[in-house]
Image (tube, rainbow, N blue to C red; front, side):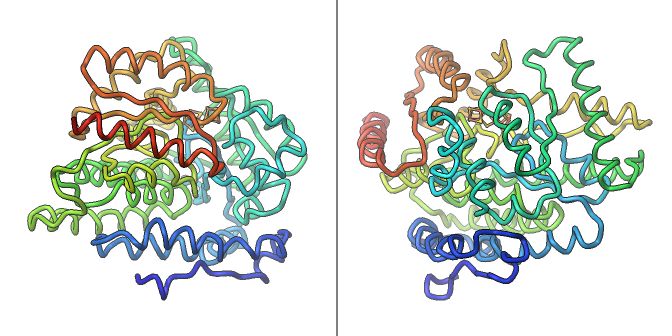
Length: 431
Ligand code: BJ8
């Protein structure tokens, strides 16, 4: 797609219907168009199949929203989530729509700061601000949202968010002992009961089995894509990979899976032909840490405009979302729910203690991605990831891995300073 033809579409009538602040929101598509053109469309030699993902951005405030409105009109539930611990297979089982609502924009933070304290995580503030300012069509379209108790900022914000949109909360334990698993299964069952109530449809063995396959297929497609991008020289940029992993949270799973496989087929031929986005001598960086919700492209843009390529994201908008699948051999619905819970328990978020499996996972991904340096990214005020960076640093020192820890928010103010630190890090790797 050329820069001249690309433009994020507007639909004020649709936004009006969703009770948005239309006047204010109308500035958003042109602003995002400009950012997207500069960050994505100016890249050289992008895979042809990225056209689909560009179109998902073009239609982010229109076509995809309309699909969700249509789903609601057909009586299908539309559920907003903020965490990869909320089991989307159960929403899929009743033919519902699941959409990730984490906020990645500085534009909604002033709205949030009128109510919330300033010194909490920008992802929470951004999401909350989108709702209170009525400037996110996804927040406006959902029937309800499902929060969780992973971190303090989120769990206390849900109490306030409930004044603006029905907010349910799933308790996620903070340890992974046998007794925690029992609690977790009960929480999954409560979630299922809630989804059944809102959709007026039963989750059965058959529809859950179908949903597990759909989501397993999606995760397998993303695993395939991520292992292809590990090839040196890289057949796709880290920015494009981040984008695809962000789109995974609002596209329909079946269509997304199909398009990811089309891209994988193209990447396979690019690898065969030696057609890469950067020469094999380009420094290869892996990023770990807190998720980067749309449109947070800040760090990837800094790294890739500094002459390196990002080759892996150990993040919930990254491998933590798709590294594990659910065992499909259950014989009863209770077994299915147990297998499902076991899969979700393998996600190694820093809100757990102890969480040493994440350190091992980061090392494993570092090795398989052929990275030459690790940048740990932590959103400001995220204490659990920030403290876990200590263990990552220790692991990197032991393994001789170049390591840089970055703490940042969504404001553009620290871009210059980050650029200097990233450039010095890349020089260190090259040296
Ligand atoms: S499983 S990473 S999606 S909780 S960055 S809001 S933790 S203060 S996003 Fe997350 Fe689930 Fe964990 Fe993943 Fe709080 Fe930290 Fe902010 Fe965070």
